[in-house]
Image (cartoon, one colour):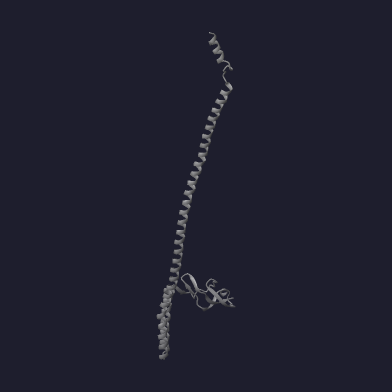
Length: 208
């Protein structure tokens, strides 16, 4: 009996074991802090990933817009090249049209020049002035007809109203009749119209 007591005393020679609440609190606090830190890390990671997704979406949008701009630029350059070709072709066709139109007009005058040459030759061989005059009148009428066919007509000689748009006053003369003032008294050189445009102003004398 005494031996058992001695053994028990030997077992409890040190300090009696006791519950360490402070250590337990530290361990629990560390675990809780670790858990909170882990949750915060996950939240931060999620927050960091969200802007990255937005940046990626914006980058894709920018790439798409850049592709659209490049496409539009390519189409614009193509249209500019087409327009430049069209402009050059139009200018060339216009130049050729003017050139050919002038060529056709001059070509139409050649038969009349031939008639004048024949008329002059006939006038030199013929003593009959009347026949020469009639031949010249025929050539003159032929020339007027040709000019009218090409839109050239002389201004109405009966129109005595002075118009600076159609007439050029080369002289003025005093007139006793008040109704003749500012009117055309004489036409020195006939004026001609090409369709509705003045081809040559008529040179006239105006009453004052």
